[in-house]
Image 1 (tube, rainbow, N blue to C red):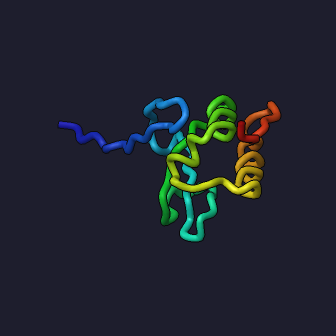
Image 2 (cartoon, one colour):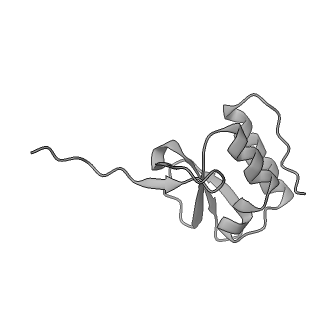
Length: 99
């Protein structure tokens, strides 16, 4: 009998696809209210997950889905930080401006 190791599953807040936790990028709202990228997946705070695709980052930053999931308001500095991080894995320029 083989024992299979459990792989944690998470859902992308934008496209709603369920994937392995390690395939997604975690965003976390820290205690002081700022939003940060959690590369380790272990930071304390309210978290949400995004696919590492340009489409999910564009929609997530343009709409209020990330803010709703984290129960926080993205400041212009936070939004710019997330846009910079998003540019690390795709080539197209994005705009994180709200409607």
